[in-house]
Length: 357
Ligand code: SF4
Image 1 (cartoon, protein in one colour):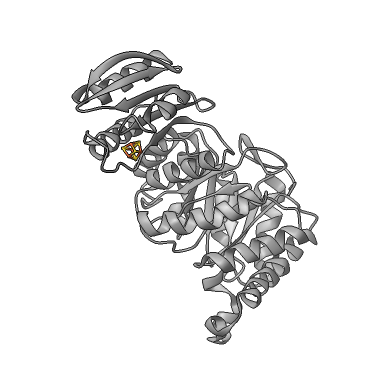
Image 2 (cartoon, helix red, strand yellow):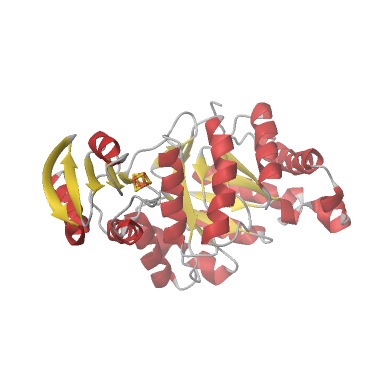
C-alpha cells in the first residue's frame, strides 16, 4: 500500500521508502551518557530510528544532549503527560509517540500538535490494545472476536487522528499493536484500507528472544508481504541489539532489504561427518561483531554438511563450503578453490569475506 511520505529527522518513512528498522533504548533516559552509548551500539548494528522513554521532566530535559551525540532520528515516547511531549519537541526530537489511551483530553492532544506544527516534528499515534479506553470500562476484551478487537483499536486511533487532522497537521505515523498476532494483523490490514499514513509495525509485550521473534516474524511476514508496514520494531525482552539484528533478518528473508551476510546452512543429518552446528554458530557469532560490508551489500555464505546437497548450495553462494569427512571443499563464485580441514572453516570463510570488501 502506498503511504504518505513523512520526514523523520534526516530520513523519510513511507511513500515507497525502504522499510526502516527501529528499536528502543533500555537505559534510564535521564542518564543521557549511558543512553547515548547504547544508541551508538545500535547505530553500529543497523538501527535506523531510535525511541527513548520519557517518563519524567528529567528525561525530557536531556533529549537535546542525546540528539547532539547520535546520527539517527530520535523519537520521544510519551505517556500520560502532554507537558513532556511539548518539552521533548522543544528539545529537538524528530518525532514523538503518544498513546491515545492515556494522553487525556482533546485539549492535551491539541497542545502537543501546536508545538509539533511549529517545529515540523512528526507525531506517531500509537494504539496499544492494553491501554484502550474500553478496557478501562469493561473486561470484555478477551470475549470479543478478533475483528471486534481490531475495530475497537482502529476506532480509538481514528478519534485521535481526527483531532490532529482538524488542526491541519498531517505528519502523522500510526501503529496498532496487540500482544497477539491475529488481532495485530487484522487491525493493520483494516486500517491500511482506510487511511494512507505510514504504519509502524510491532507486537506489544512480544516476549523473549525466542518467542518474541517468532511472534513478530509471523505478524510482520504477513503484513509486509501484503505491502503493509513502513517501519518495524521487534520488541524483545532481550538486548536492543538483538531487536535490530532480528529486524534485519526478517527484512532480508522477505527480500525487502539487503545487508551484510546471509548464512545458508543445512540442518545436518546422518550423512554429516563434521560438527556443523558448532561451526555455523561460531561463524554467526563472529559475523555479528564483524562489520564487513556496507549496508547495501549482501553476501551469501553457504555451509553445508555433505556432498549430497552441499556442492549445489555452495556453488550458488558467493562463498561456500561442502563438507566431507573432517574436511570441506571451499567454493568461491561457483568454483572449488581448495580443500580445507574442519578446524579452519570459520577462519577461511572470514578471510574470504574480508577479501570481498
Ligand atoms: S547437506 Fe548433507 S548433511 Fe546436510 S542435511 Fe543435506 S544430506 Fe544431510
